Every structure is written in structure tokens, then in C-alpha cells.
Length: 366
Length: 221
Image (tube, rainbow over all chains, first blue to last red; front, top):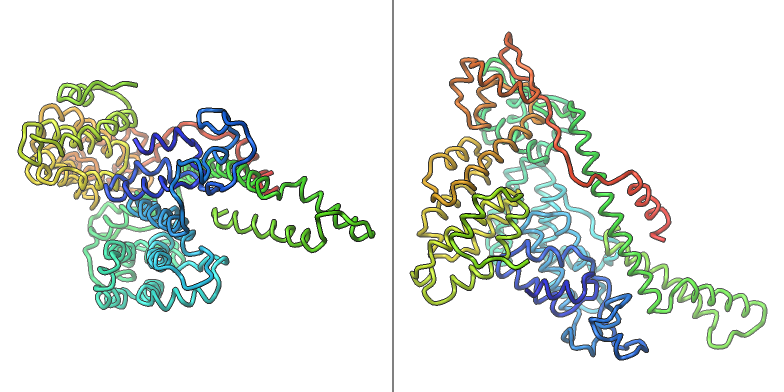
């Protein structure tokens, strides 16, 4: 009901409100993860503005026709409670946790990335540290390695993150080294920490994902090998060939590993694993997936650009305004004075425009 | 659209109907609020009231709707949303949990055993049979791209057929595979799967891709 009300009031869900946080928290607590997706899958691009634009009273009514929900979701509209930066951080942390529960790792990483790259002037928030710990684990689950943090995070903040999340960083290094015994030792040594941070479930999944990433690592070296050879290479714990084949078949069927299996007529001969994609249909299916992804990206990019234009307009950074500023610069260079606009201001705003656009696109993962 | 109230008859009708899985999921998800209120209210399953049969049928049907729409993590979350007492006591929900475990561990043979061997309520039977058929088809598509050559016994294991009959080269069983486009090598006694194409709805046009690249190229303008 909360979700339907939110989507009815603002179908784009682009203006962040206190209801966003309340709703995602409720979904997380009730373990109703899928219910949160229609809201989480939409980009948050605005905060309720403090000043409403000159408009007639009727256009402020939510039921009137609006170009943007920003015109009626304002600080004074009563639709949202007063927001703080912590609300924003918590929304993205909780959203990331919803995606984690659904094993949508790339979306979870994007949400957590927004939290950890929040600009700070003083000490970093504990919410950000918590998000960083989860972000490390999600990186391992998604890519099998510790991703480099966004350029938006200053090196000093990265150092603070590293020192506060040391066991997580050590775990990631053990995972990347491909040393299962060391990895298991790291998991055991910091068991209390994982439990205190409520990350034990994710850490267990990291251990489970080890075999998948080991197989992917072996793919870099071998074009084909038998299941028996793979078992010798990948796992110090000896499993039966049949069990190993079953694990590999599950990985291939789930799409995690792109390879094919070739059995022999005799049960005693070990099955061959080929990493080349023999089936043209597999390639076709991959192309079709890419095509769907591109279509989705097109849609979201179009939406984002619409919102970016809106932000530019509200911040008086529209193309027309910048053109006017540039003209102002020319006038000031030729000795004319353009009242109200100084040269420095124009340059600063020009730089701000680029910085803002870059930061915005980066935060949206584009 | 206004739905009829949540009742055993309505759930049995839905289970027996042939509505597409996504539609079935949507309908049942709209009933979840009613089910939650029912389980929390007086005379509820938690307090040992008389609605436990209805709730059991609802949660079991909703569980299968998740499986039919391939939402395994969310099906797991649903099992945690069920009223705790009911989850521990109800045989149908216990079967759902056993099935979930087998699916989570990708134990194909066990999945067929659970679907066929465990006692499921009569009104849930159509959904159980429907899921068995769905799981078999889905696995057939998966092994057709996973294996280049496969022994009949392994294929039988994945598809829940009789492995002994396959081992003996039962022509009826081999024919089942060859009818899907697979080829049979009688000398090597191996099946060579041929990937099965799955038609995808709403294929984006090449114009869409062109537009995306243009958007990326000019910063979205």
C-alpha cells in the first residue's frame, strides 16, 4: 500500500522523501524484498526544494498536471519529513541490503558505492563504514576481487575505511590470492567480528563463491581440462569426480561460468571441461542479453538526462544561462561591464557545471 | 482489478487454472496482506485457530508461484515471512522447505523425489505437477547448452527419468531426447545435445541500440 501510494504520487520516485527510507526499512524488516524493487529500481535525482517556484495554487496540488514531481514535493508540502544526510545514507544502505538479499550483486554494489562515496568534511559516518564492509564482500561475490573505490572518494577517506575494516580487507586479499586454507583461517579468526557486524551470512557466501571464481581463474590459463585435473587444481579437499562435475554443471547452468562439458561413454573416463563457447546459440543468447541491457540503459540514461536538465534549470545552469555567462565574459574582456555577472563568477560556475555533471554521472554508475 | 476474497476455493481455482506464472504471482502477492492480517488476528494460525488450512494453502501456492517465476532467493524470503508456528507444524509447508533446500543445492534427483514422493494437499497438486513439468523443461534447456556429449544415464538423472532404462538404451527414452533435436551416437552410446532456443519477448530493435549509442556519445542530449 505504501509502495502504491508512493508510485501514484510520484511515478518517477525521483524526489527523495522520508517515505522512501521508511518503505525500504519496512521491506527489509518484513523480508519482503521484491516489493521494494519498483521503488529502488528508480533513480533518486532530487531532494525536496525549500523554495517553491512561483506558480498558481492549483498547480501545487499533486493531482494537477506537473512537468516534474519537484514542483509539488517541497519541504513545505508536508509530503516528506525533514531530511538529513543520514536518511539519504540509510536509504542507500538499506536498498543495497535488499539487493544483497536477492543476490543482485551489481545493483547492491552501486547502492553501497553511493554511500561510501558521500562527500564528507569531518569524520566519516559509521553508516559509511558499515556500507564499506558490505561493499568489500559484495565486490568479492560479484567480481571475485576487491574493486578499486570510486574516484569521488578522497585517498584520506579510503585510508580511514581500510583501517576501520581491516579484517574485511585481509579477507579480500586472501580470496584474491586463491589460497583457500588462508581464506578459511581468516574467516575463523574474525568470526566474532562478522557476527557483530551482522555480516556472517555474506562471509559464508564469499566462501561458497570461492569455487566459482577459482574455475573462472583457471579459465584464464586452460582452454580445456578434465574434471579430475580441475579438482586437483581448484580444491585441496578431494571430492569425487561425480560431485565435482555436478558442481561445475551447476555453475555452467546458472550462467556463472561459460563452458561446456563433454562426457565419455565409459564412466571411468573423466569428463572434459571446455572453456570455449562451442554453441553459437550461447553466443546468441549473450547477445540478446546485451541487447536487453542496452535497451534498459537507454531508458535510464534518457530519464537521467531529463533530470539533469531539470537540475541545471533549477540551479540556473541551463545551456541558455551558460551562453549568457559566456557572453558576459566576452563583454568584460572587451571592456564592457555586464551588470550582475563578474568574470570570476562565470568561470567558477562553468567549472562547477562540469564538476557537477561528472559527479552526477559517476554516482549513477554511468 | 478487484479480486475475490482470499478463500480455499479461490486458491484451488487459481492453482487449477492455467494463468501465466507471472500473473499467478501478481494475484497471489496481492493476497499476502490479507494472509498476514489473518495470521496475526484472533483465531489465527499462531494461536491455533481455524484458518491454518487456508494459510497453509496460500503460502504453499505462493511459494510455487515464486518457483514458477524463477525467484529462488525471494522464495526463501517468503519461507521466513510465513507464520512461524505454521511453518514448523504444517506438513505442506515443511515439504516446501525440503524442496527449497534441494533446489538451493541443485540436487535434481532429490527435487523430483520430493515433488513426486511427498504427500502434497489435493488442492495444491495442479501447481506441484505444473512446477515439475516447468523444472524438467528448464533443466532440459540448461543441459542442452551445458553438455556437448552426455551419457543417457546422466541426462535421465537431470530429468528425473528412469536411469536404468536409459543405461540399457531404451529406445523410447532415447527418442524423447532426439525429438528435442539431440543426436544419438549408438556406437559411443552418447547423446549430443543441441541447444534449445528460448524465444524472448519484446526483443529490442536495432534502432534502440543506435539511440543508446547516440545518447552515450553526446552525453544524453
